[in-house]
Length: 198
Image 1 (cartoon, rainbow, N blue to C red):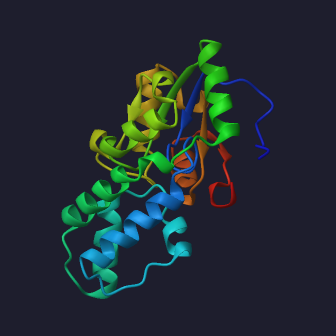
Image 2: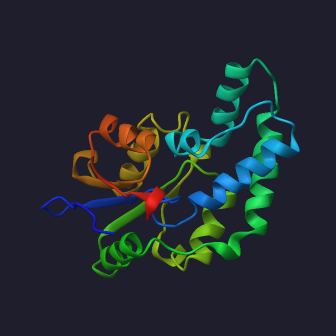
């Protein structure tokens, strides 16, 4: 994987987790599918829909699907089953080599780095741990820390604030369209990480 990096240094670097730092998107898709089947969801959620929704908080995704299909499945129950299934299969995870190498490089150089993920901390923390990246990050932002998840800019703005860096001096690494929209809304530069085929 070759990343198209801007030709300048930044004061802060913000990484999405799933599909960006950790090659976890196929596992998340399997977890979603298992939970939907378990709860008798009336829809067949395709991989295309899953990747188009990358970075959107789980419960928001369920609420949007409920509205689209005219049902009222419990977002918490679907999330909890998905999270439990995902946690049982964590051994399948590995870092995304090109992105993990950059995170390690920036951290070794004393640069300010953080994670801003659409997944709950209960999933992000063990994913980073299994991938061998948890020790790099003191700042991890998840949907519980903000009012609005991606594509709103809140998560990235909070990450910049906690790093003590101006949003305009941050570079975001993202694999999903909602995350890129969030970076742009935050006034940040971004790098696309092609997780689907990475």
